[in-house]
Image 1 (cartoon, rainbow, N blue to C red):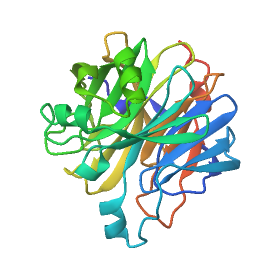
Image 2 (image 1 turned 60 degrees about the vertical axis):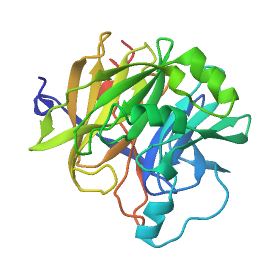
Image 3 (image 1 turned 180 degrees about the horizontal axis):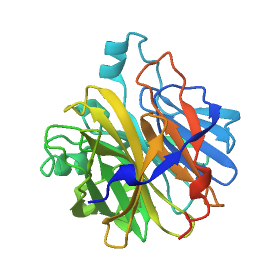
Length: 288
């Protein structure tokens, strides 16, 4: 198995965002869409991190008390760009309340019921925790984060045509499920790594982010000892793995058209705004 310590990449901070707990991001043209797992909004920035706008995904307001907010939040952990240009935000599925998604089309928002698909997935994982999603080679891929009891990191492969049909019906059904590919990740400083996002580089290569968080719960946070960036080959096996510095909990990954990646981190502290990073060293090879 690849050792992330053999290759180290330095993050360069571009900006500080207007939200904490950033969990996913998507590049769309010259805009950067950012999602947070403890908020009810989707924010838009420039590719350099300048604030542009905010879109409400769900009505209401979450409580400020941290424990109550954690219990009531929709836990939006994944964001992807669909072929026709719409955006899909997905809840993690780690509790019943977190089985909602939001489809954003031309500025309008439609709530999506994820429970038919997520109910099927609970039969495959001890602790369901969807934290990334991307369209890749005609499929919709979900990243199952293995930070729960079974340490089950995996890629969930969905039929894209069926998923697009389902979304127009306001749901994702079990009929979309094609297969599940387990992903074995190493440890980082003695702490198991777990998937946090997926993204496709301009040349079609599939990348993932993962973090080492000292917890065996898909609900409770733990101390983060570091994060990695990896590339998967055509068989969905790990082909490259690099440690990221400094130590931050990378939760979101996206690629610009020039191959330069953008990444966001979550400090698990609502008083700390999320940073936006890039990796200059990766841009030359990310298109392969």
